[in-house]
Picture 1: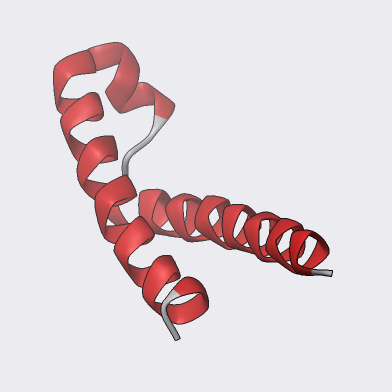
Picture 2: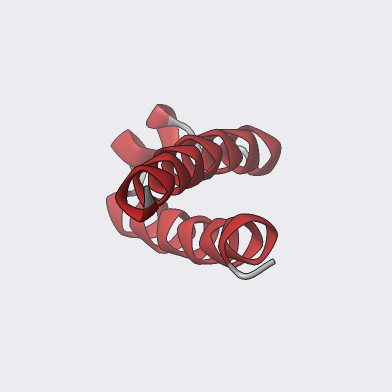
Length: 64
């Protein structure tokens, strides 16, 4: 029972994280064009987005 709950929670968290990252990318203009033009800047911005998205999602789903 606990294993099923944790698997469901993990799947829900990963789906919400992916959605949040995509939304933040769009809102902040982090595109494939930026990746092609300046890879280091793209990586920096994606790391920043991922860190913020993880904090948001984990606080909403995991730590509630």
